[in-house]
Length: 83
Image 1: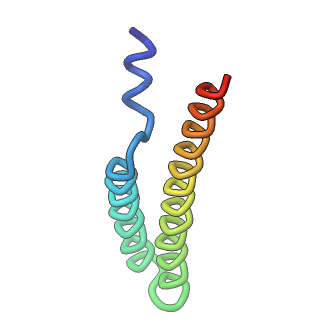
Image 2 (image 1 turned 180 degrees about the vertical axis):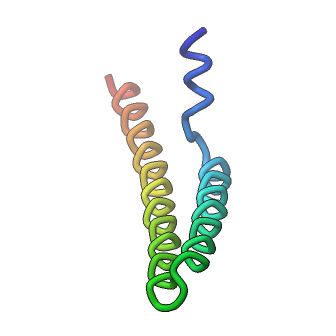
C-alpha cells in the first residue's frame, strides 16, 4: 500500500513535469512581485530575475531527468531481452 502511495509523488510523464514547472513558475513570480514591493528598484528586479531563473534551471533539470530515466528503462529492457 505504501508503494502505491509513493508512486503518486513520482513524475512519470512530460505532461506531469510541465504541470509541476508551471506551478513552480507561478509561485516564483508571486515571490518575485513581493520582492519588488519590499525592495523597490534595481535590487527587487534582480531578485525577481533570480526567482524566474531558478524555475528555468529546475524545469530543465526535471525534463532532462525524465529523458535519462526513459533511456535507462529502454536500455534495461534491451539487456533483459538479450539475456
